[in-house]
Amino acid sequence: MKNRLLSIVLILALSASFAIAQEPGKMSFGILGGVNFQNLNGKFSSGDKLENDMLMGFHGGVNVQIPIAPEFYFQPGVMYAIKGAKSTPFDGNYYTKTTKINYIEVPLNLVYKGALGNGFVMLGFGPYVAYGIGGKVETEVGSVTVEKDIEFKNEAGLTEYPVYKAFDAGANIFVGFEMASGIFLQLDTQFGMLNINPDRGTADDKSASKNTGFGLSLGYRF
Image 1 (spheres, rainbow, N blue to C red):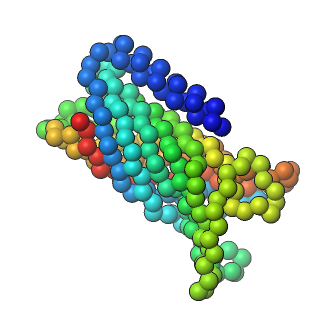
Image 2 (cartoon, helix red, strand yellow):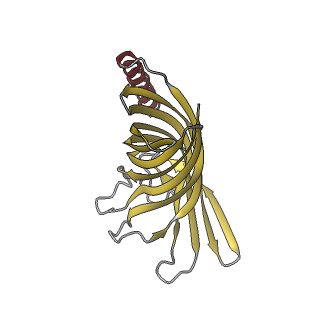
Image 3 (cartoon, helix red, strand yellow):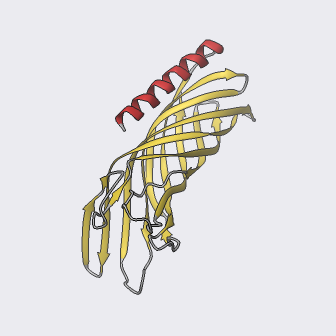
């Protein structure tokens, strides 16, 4: 997994170098943060659909904006994000289960910026890759609360819990507006494309979990 991350960083660096060589325009840097509304969509091991509620988390990080053509930019970044979900009652047992997974995330977006009034309208899309670095599952039954740390494994036994795969990847889409002062606001959506549940080693296991959600970010570009 570490080799994958090193490969991603290398590809990012080479892409940035290529973009600069193609278009010697001025780069800019941004810092941003905001709130996430995340969910884990998928299936139970039985094949029944997961019935989760959205979890409110947060994200923050930095990016660099590299011009590649008039009004178009390559925008790689590094983010810290909290994802996960909240459960609903299941099989008549009333409880609240909150899953929080902490990720280091690398978005690789292509961004269009068109002049609008005293600023720019932004439209961006591209892939992201992420790596889990920690997390907890908190279960509340009445007045009793139990917390367990999340482990990251590609394979796990039937009784190991909570376990998820560390590596995730998917797609970003965002729209926003950047003022002439450099302050910007954007609304983004993410669609996880990988099942982050570990392989339990049973042929009839139909379980799957994918990160999905949206967020609102406030930032400053300089």
